[in-house]
Image 1: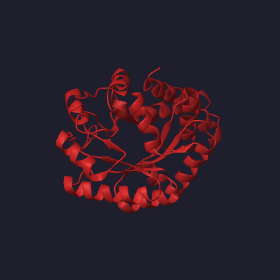
Image 2: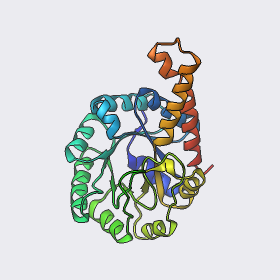
Image 3: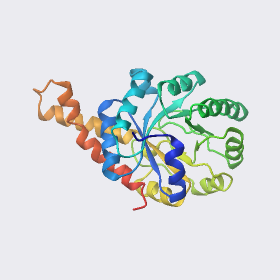
Amino acid sequence: MTLATLRDVLQPALCERCAVAGLVVLGWEDARAYVAAAEAVGCPVILQAGPGCRAHTPLPVLAAMFRTLAEGATVPVVAHLDHGYEADECRIAIDCGFTSVMFDGSKLALNENIKKTANIVNMAAAAGVSVEGEIGFVGYSGGVEGRGTTPAEARAFTEGTGVDAMAVSVGNVHLQMEQAAAINRDQLAQIEAVTNVPLVLHGGSGIPDSVRHDLALNSKVCKFNIGTELRQTFGKTLRAELNNDPEVFDRIKILSSVEPELKSRAEGILRNLQRN
């Protein structure tokens, strides 16, 4: 069994100057494809259950799915709750068997965010579970505008919470369908100067591949959240498969036919974050 915590995979990444992908899961087929891709590359992978996924599939089912895949894997697999907004949701995820939770208090005032995140860290530590927090606010493409993370906030947040990873806002944007994000490297360097905690960039699909690779090798960004480009791959491949054979109705056959292309795309994402 290679079930791992976020700390298990991000601390080595921080030391070795590479990064791990947090791949957003929406169902069994993509989760299976992501683990297969990680095994092909020979690197860890973080399976992420975000709010949309959780609205469709209960946490106990997702936890069992992730843990089952980890048990059969030869590489470390992290079962991660992404964007948990309430302490109760994080607690349920921990009780179900997730090995990592993200408490998202980015919309809260700094002191409240620190206090609530620290409480989650204490609760998770008792169960051997890692915690990711967010300071600043990563905005949404076509939606709420982001607010950049300041070095002072980053320092106060890491010192006051004890998080295993910190998500920051430095030009990255959620749900971008094109690789158009402009990462503020000066701002990122200032944040790196005041903390040794592995950093996380949400909205990784909007960051150009070359920039992701450079950041993975030359910064403290150790985790990139990737969802949108994989959803695009899934949707485009599924449409093509249905158009190729309009007489197929077996959902297992239909959904399984998407896995090879999804695995291939995930492999490219994972390899791009490695040193070799």
